[in-house]
Image (cartoon, rainbow over all chains, first blue to last red; front, side):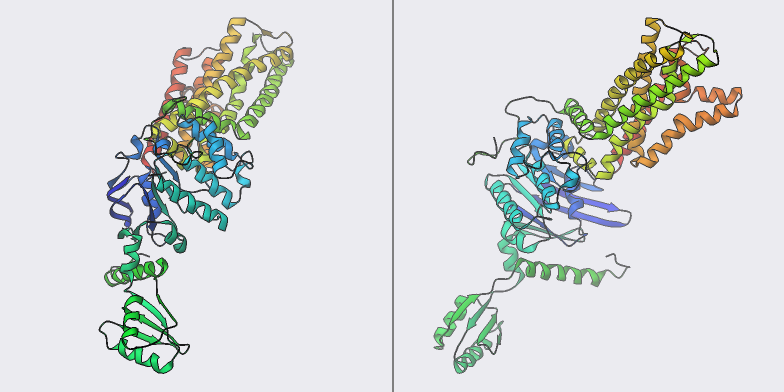
Length: 312
Length: 267
């Protein structure tokens, strides 16, 4: 588990991270979302003891990262996959990492196999593609077999295979009871990977809920129906429009978009007025849409109050 | 182990078996691995060996041709330190600043989150390499010089061995000093400017201008003090022990300055 309590980071007069309090729990994948510059990386660096918080604290397994005796056995982290000496081989990099925490050298070969980098392990890391660097970063995170994983943009630069691989990997790690905290700017990927979401904007906590609740809260229920008969279509539209809190749009191709009612409710209404349907489905809001709605609201709020010469 | 079998539960972070290094021992092992896994270190040592050979050959040849008084043969190697110290300066500067240019310093601090331990491990590895390398250079340099002196030098096993050890000690202290400066400066250019000024330019200027006061100042600088315990036969203003302590004081000061910057600043 990772706990943040009032975590704050100030650079000059800029609040990069503003009073963040939340827990990242074990056994699930927690996604960390926010626009560029929202403070995600700074937050992760403070959790890992790399940046000093201005106020507040972050605990991993109940302790500040600095106090962990063999930190790699407690927390596996990947921050910047490119941060490897270009002349050092991937294997030597992992070996130096393993020796720092008394991890047996054979574990290096194991994680190299796990991430599919065994063949390139003796090449200088400077010759690696972005995807291979990413795999090396993941190998480093897994090296100590830690119960907590912190991954900053792990799918960056990975090919579609690699993206699927990461998704499987983090899902499996969480299923084994580990704590997985990952950031990504790829919304579609986050939607299928994360169980829980922490969203920040301008360093402030905007949301800390399950994925399902986040999506449900973002927009009211809506459905789409296909009505072949034009006369029946206008009957259904009139009937729907009479209900409070519902907006309807009929398109020329025979589809009716209903905002404010689920597919089940629309189906019942259609049945009541004897309208024949060819198709009926709930319209699921995408994480991207939900996220955009949330950040748009927060930006609106921010621009409304930020008359004192706001920062970007 | 972990990835191989599927139905395992998550460990509690304790090590089940095997070696239990970590702490300073782990940090030193890690730094040692890092140092030798890139070519920079071995290249500097090869360069140092060549420079030592050339310097001591010319030093001894000049002494022979100009018919200098007979001196202990180890003085050639001891004098070559004015140049060869920069082999270890470069080695140690690169070991530290490459972490900042490649961004691996964050990785290093994730592996060893106690910052003083990261610096101590780097200082220890650089210091030991410079001690052993410096001593070995001195032995080789003495052998080269012996043939080039062609009789204009005296050999005493104890004195020669003592000088080789003294060269090792000086080089080791300079390497540790360099690690401190490099952690404070973070950039290779900045660190090298400071070190070249301190170890070469400033002494050259002070001695070039001449005068007792400036010479006295130079005696308090690392290389000036080092020279007094490296070379045998001159009359130093203080004992060899004091000379070692002066260099050690510079080293300690640089180490503390580096530590202060490393601990205070975000990585």
